[in-house]
Image 1 (cartoon, rainbow, N blue to C red):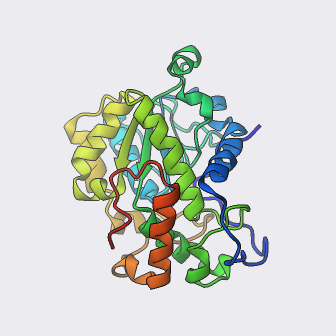
Image 2: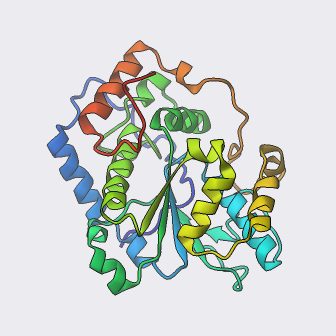
Length: 291
């Protein structure tokens, strides 16, 4: 049985040769079948359903930041110690992480995709599935950030990485993973909006107070305005940078190096636009034809 994915699993070093950029991608129908087969074997969210809520996010979508804000708001409201590290796994962790503060509502975090059966509303009631908050980001920026973090491990130029690898797990995230994630969660959010709350990273940056309050409501958390304000106030990049976990790969908090879109040359932009137009079924309001 599949398990919930860790916060940011490291790609396997030297897992395979660079994918053949000339290989023809799957047709949209074949890609949907491929995505369905993979999702049908992933029971992680069904297995780890005993919690107050699940935060499910794209890679490099601001997961640490949202978790850190929410964890600090919870610790303020419940008068417990704040998160030890910026990943906040002692308050909002994965299913394998120890429960450090049992008095807090148990929230879990992962990058997992939903099982196809989760589109059935009756299953949520029958299995008492928790509410889900899905954190997404413009996949073009997510890919640049992911490549910046794992460039040494990937050991390919960005022009190769951006084309991804439909058939393997060479990368911990690529354009095809992002599309599978967005299509799967987009369908679930459309069908069960009362169970799935979507938060866009760009909106979180623009108005963290509003979006953090939305997350708290989605999870049914009794967080007052003071707790929410505290969570935001202590979660700047400067605050988070001093709380790096020495046991984890560095780079969870990175300073902006300008417009990430400059990483894309003309061919990469045309490729991303064409792939999204052909394969992406739920765009979450992003316009991938505009750069």
